[in-house]
Length: 283
Ligand SMILES: Nc1ncnc2c1ncn2[C@@H]1O[C@H](COP(=O)(O)OP(=O)(O)OP(=O)(O)O)[C@@H](O)[C@H]1O
Ligand SMILES: [Mg+2]
Image 1 (cartoon, rainbow, N blue to C red):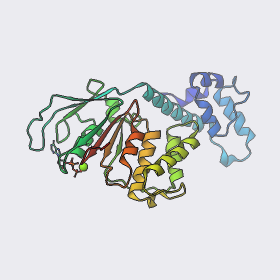
Image 2: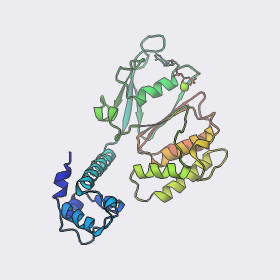
Image 3: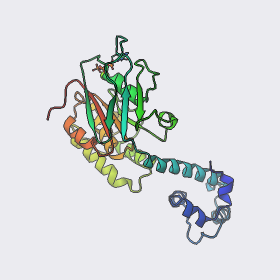
């Protein structure tokens, strides 16, 4: 854990060499680091504060240091995330709907695979996806267990919000936020700390329109998108922005979007894509 007080006594140039990404933090606070390398963070902030007349606009050095330490923590866990790859996901059997032991030993899914889960309504497709989303450890109604990379998962994967294992595109999707398509995408891109969000936003919007039956523009409030349009947006967003190594898709065929194009977009080298469907994808 970083202590804000220690950061204040650290020289700017040492901060930058230890955490190269802090430059963008100072930019976002409109603080110019030019020529400040030798100063401690505290000296630098004191100097910056005397240069601003408006008292209301200022944060105390302590407040800035707290924000900076939060930023560094977030970035470190974000970067660490990247190193941790999911190569396999293993499903170990529990019991079926009638309470009988399931007739398989284990099912392994590998990164780069796209797997369709096929079965009639009520057969347990959504339940299977939910077991994976929760990283079930014999603690769901099916008593199944999920392993990652060949072993029982560490707590980090189950409970850490920064290590998001699964991107879920569920059967029902409702937006409650009052944002335009563009604002929504920008917010997501910023939360992913993408260096240059604009081309990504444009690409997601373009791909979403390719998937949706009816196109929409970037100013549309997300709450007024149709079901098919919002799923198209979420699929394009997941494919292009999400870093979750596992993508779960529950029933997209009735949602008015092009299922084959959606899969082509989602399939990537590193991801495991599981799609529940009533009938197999026809070529
Ligand atoms: N192995 C199981 N043990 C206990 N309950 C189960 C099991 N599998 C499924 N269920 C339960 O059966 C019900 C129907 O399952 P589910 O909703 O997953 O079906 P589905 O295949 O997704 O259906 P639909 O195609 O209509 O979406 C749910 O209440 C689910 O929790
Ligand atoms: Mg279902």
